[in-house]
Structure formats: C-alpha cells, structure tokens
Image 1 (spheres, rainbow over the protein chains, first blue to last red):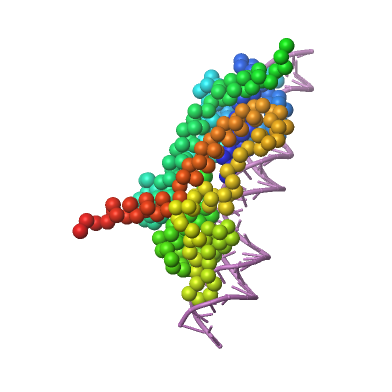
Image 2: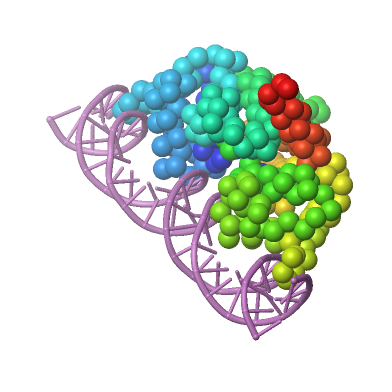
Length: 145
Length: 145
DNA sequence: TTAACTGATACTAAATTAGTATCAGTTAAC
DNA sequence: GTTAACTGATACTAATTTAGTATCAGTTAA
C-alpha cells in the first residue's frame, strides 16, 4: 500500500529545500540536484506548487522559486491534495443508493474512519516541522568538536 | 488517495457473504450476484483467497467455497496484504544509504509512523466485526412490527 | 453421462504514475 | 541589445498497476 506518490514525495522534499533557504530565489536546477530529482519532472511539480500558491516564482536570469509563506503553515496534507487529490471521504454518506448493498456500507464506514485518521495525521505534519526535525538530526550526527 | 483497491474491496465483501452463511458451500456465482461483483473477476479473487488459506473450496457440482476459519480471526489487514502487499515500512530503516539524503529521511519517518497507524487500525477490523456491524444496521433499519 | 462447479492460466483494456522534450517569454548582466 | 539563465505552458511517451475477460482442464453430485 503506497501512501505517497513520487509527485508528492518530491514536492515535499523540494519544499524542504526551499524552506531551508528563506528569502532567496532557488532554481529548479539547484533543487533537482540537491534532492536527486529528475530535472524536467521537478519543473512540472514546481509549476503545480506555484499554481496552487505554495511557492512563488521569479522569471529570468537570477530568478527561481521560494516559499510563498511560513513553512509551518504548509502541511503535507496540502501537498497530497495537490498531487493525489483529497483523501476520499466515501460517497456513501451522500448518496444513499450506493449503500443499498450494506456489506459495502459497513466496510466503507471503517475505511472512512481510517482515512480520516490519516488525513488528520498528515495535516499535523508541516514543512516547518520536517525542517526542524532535519536540523535536529543533523546536529545529532555532527562529529563532536 | 485510494486506500483499498477493488480486489481488496471485493474480497472483503465476498468474505462477509461467506461469513454470513457458515457451514455451507457458497458458489462464486452466488457471491458475485449478491455483491454485484463481475463473475470472472471474483473467481480470480476467490482463487487468491483459497491459496492464501482464508477460504476453502470444494470442486464439482454442489461445491463452492466457505471460510476456512472463524470470521473474527480474519482481519482486513490480512486481505490487504494478499492483494496490495504489506503496508510499506520504508526501506530507510534497513538500508542506511537511502538515508544519505536527510530530507528524504525525516519525511519517511513521518510516513512510517502514519503507515503503522493505518496498519494497526486495519488489523483491528475483522470480517466478524463487519458482519456484526452489518447485522446491527439491518436490525435498526427493519420496520417495526 | 451430464451439468455445475473450481483450478490454472493467458490475455486485454483502462487508468495512473513517472518521466521527457520543446518552444515561448522574461530578466539580469555584460 | 544581445546573450545566457531562468520560468510558463504544453504536448508527449513509457512503465506500472489496476480492472476485467476468456478458456480449457479437472472434479463431483445427481
């Protein structure tokens, strides 16, 4: 069971890269090298992130992209929704006729409950949190002076 | 984000059908009609369930399939693992070199945590539980005498 | 002997995911 | 004002997964 697609995975990692270099225009090239993401693929992912308003861009030489807002306000859930669509809340609740088969219905009820949990969890994880985790890990692994 | 594939969804519903008719051989045809599952597709799903030991079959006229054990011991998690593979515990833990990119690593850590939650939840849901939920729903919706 | 079944397996179609390529337009710097 | 370094837009292909179909062989009950 694969939770995140490459799109989402790469997007989050790109957002982390951008979040670690605040107030500067970072090129797609630089991110693609830093995160080992195929350049053209990342470009398309970036364009989605720009369209959705999570990052802003500047064209031309010396241009690039940067986060549009505080990393703490960018949730992994938001990124998932851009690339994989919203976590499905089963149609069951809204369209009664789909529930005529009740075996289907009780199963969906459980699925909905679990999907909601996943949703809530991914809403708690922000790019800001990942960056601070990352910095903590890096400090721990630094050789002692 | 789709949690269950049709394979798993159909399989669970088929198991519910079988669990509701204990001690009798139920044909794939009957299940396919009851649950509105394409017959040939269900047949292949059944064959997987048989191979994996969740159901047993009897060949020939008057044959069919039945649950191999108590519905309370058949977990949705088991079914997911048959058709969608185990919930991925990131390779990150086992192959250190994949963690050289730390942005990747902190993200995976969160994913692993959430996957574990999902895993645990689907382990709690058994076919027996779904059947009892189902019976409860049916009683509630019966017209009063 | 025949009809009702499952066992095994090969196949196709559709959808999703992953990745590539190209050309147009913008900007900084020389 | 030309050029190099960028993003914007968009069209395309390849690989993988998911969904579904079809067929023939073998087993069993009646």
